[in-house]
Length: 279
Ligand SMILES: NC(=O)c1ccc[n+]([C@@H]2O[C@H](COP(=O)([O-])OP(=O)(O)OC[C@H]3O[C@@H](n4cnc5c(N)ncnc54)[C@H](OP(=O)(O)O)[C@@H]3O)[C@@H](O)[C@H]2O)c1
Image (cartoon, rainbow, N blue to C red; front, side, top):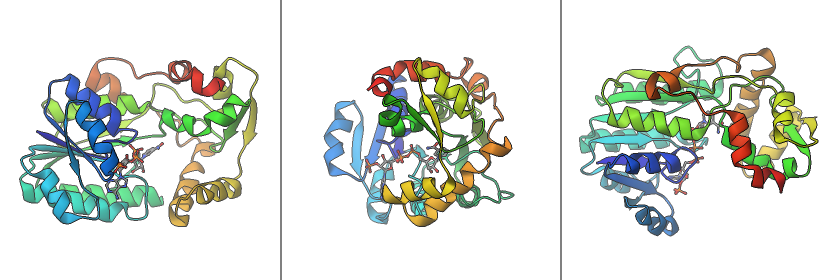
C-alpha cells in the first residue's frame, strides 16, 4: 500500500489517479474532513491527518510500504516534512518519494533551495530508501491568473525564460518511481522540454494579449494580500529573480528518461484549459 501525503494538491491529485490506474492500493491523506468522501469515491482509502499531528500521521502510515510526500510552500514546511518522515520511518515504510524543488541541494543559496535541501537531508538520514522529485515552475500556476488572461492581460512576474513543467508529468514520474525498480537514491530534476519567456507564452493564447511585467514589490504585495506569509512571499520573489538571468531556462530529460515519452507542452496545456483562459 502506498500512502500519499498532499493527495488533494496540484501534484497529489494526478498522482492518486495515476497510481489507481496502475492498480495500486492507495491511501490518500487529507487534513480536511470534507475531502474524505471525494477521495474514497476515487477508489482509494482516505485518511485524515494534519502535518501538525504526529499521532494522526503515524496512523496514516500504518501498513504502508511506500510513501509520497509533498507539502505546500509554507514557513512550516520543513517541520511538516520532518513530522511525516518520522512517522513513516517509525511505521516501517521502506521507500519515500518526496517532492521538493529544482536546485535543492546542500549547495543551494536561495531560501527555497535551502529549505527543500534540509528536508532532503533529513529523508536521506531516515533509513528509508528515498527519491527526490525536483520540479521547476508548474504550468498549473498559469491558472492562478486565468481571470486576467481571460481579460487579455498576461501578468509576467518572472521576466525571463522558464522551462515550465506540467504537474501531471511530475505525477507520472512520481508514480513510476513509486511502483518501478531502480529509482531509489535518485534526484529527478523535472522541467518541460523548452523554456519560454512571457512574450512567447502570451502568444500561445490565440488572441490579443497585453504583456504586463510585474515588479517584485507588486508581486510580494499580491502574494501577501492573497494570504501567503511574508517569509514565503519573500522566498517566492527571490526565486523569480532567477528567470531574467536565464537560470530557469535549463531543461532536464527526466520525463523522457523515466516515462519514455516527451514532456507535455505548454501550448497543449493552454489549449486544454482554453475555457479557463477564454473566460
Ligand atoms: N508551484 C510551483 O510552481 C512549484 C515549483 C517547484 C516546487 N514547488 C513546490 O511544490 C510544493 C507544492 O506542491 P503542490 O502544489 O502539489 O502542493 P499544494 O497543492 O499547495 O498542497 C498539497 C496539499 O497539502 C495539503 N495540506 C495543506 N496544509 C496541510 C496540513 N496542515 N496538514 C496536512 N495536509 C495539508 C492540502 O490538502 P488538504 O486540504 O486536503 O489537507 C493540499 O492539497 C511546495 O513545496 C513548493 O515549494 C512548487
